[in-house]
Length: 262
Ligand code: KIV
Image (cartoon, rainbow, N blue to C red):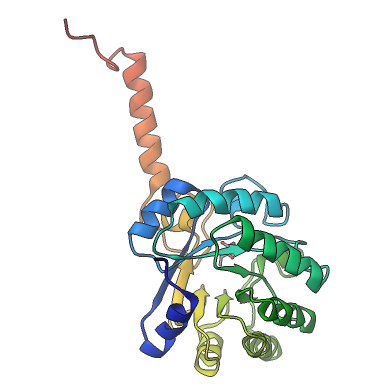
């Protein structure tokens, strides 16, 4: 049985850190699921890591559903959450309901994630939750707003920190089941984590969150460029290059596949 949303919420009271990673396809999803990850997010970062887009903006609802189906086939234990892509929910609460409804109907996801904490977004979250759709919030650096904010840390200036804090509180009051805090100062993440009753999951937000999430491409060293806060636990780019170079050399020198045994 996959981890349920109530069990995820209980982790905060139990002070058990939440481990979350992104996934974009079946094999990786299966590996990280069996390795004990609690939450698997089909993030719209798949636009960059799997589809070669310049940022997350071009990702469509069709694409994320296609990848979420593949990921879903590999997941048995983790709670699966799927990102609502740019412009699949910002137009109106009705559009958000239709898009989130499609994700929950067509994939095994238990919840959706959306970015931002403006009053309009908080109203949208409330509508989704009233319709029985679990929502994960996301504040701080919100990559779908890259043209407005870049990829810089958010919430350094006191008034920006206060804005993010208020957004987090408003999203929690609207019923999100968890909150992603991305690239904000750790004291701000701590203040939010201490105040809200839902789990916070940080990425570049310091050690005081209830859990941590990374983009799996970054963790595995598959990304071309790495955000400053994302550690590389293994250099798969290098390992793959070594393996492919060796294979290529073996073919060219007739070492592979070797002569048939007679
Ligand atoms: O799309 C994504 O991978 C995300 C994580 C960075 C949280 O939203």
